[in-house]
Image 1 (cartoon, rainbow, N blue to C red):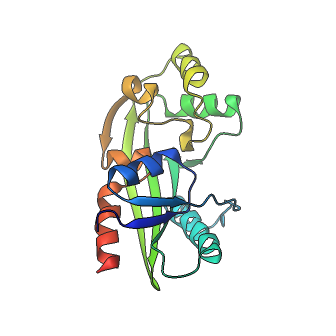
Image 2: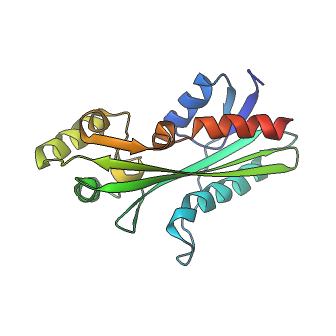
Image 3: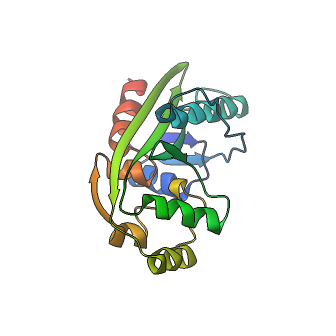
Length: 190
């Protein structure tokens, strides 16, 4: 399975890095899809729903028996779904909400090969320490986390100084639950 080629339907540099570190060869297909979702589905199902929509779009672009993977990550805090920020003010508002609070990071993954499809939904609980306005402003200025759900990357400066505890998969918070993905790829290829 090592050196297996995966068609990754994502422009995320973090997902690319994690899959390459796992030993996979990648073909990257950037997808431009509508990431809206039905408002009546539970918040912890939104990431998987969007990952499934990405897989439909990727499947339309690919021919043959390719191993394909799509994913999406959401953040749920105080029963609010925090996606990617619209702008700096929105990012600051999200980080203030996460400050001294616990939230859930949910990554949905769809893996498809030769007519078989497997879904993964991974939840990780993350607790932030209190973040000052100065820390939030510094982070937004230096790391520009505007392409990240919840306006932060756990691997960035704010994760190093602001997160006091996680329960679950660290790599899930980065953007891909690598343990579950690796086992699922092995399963789908057997």
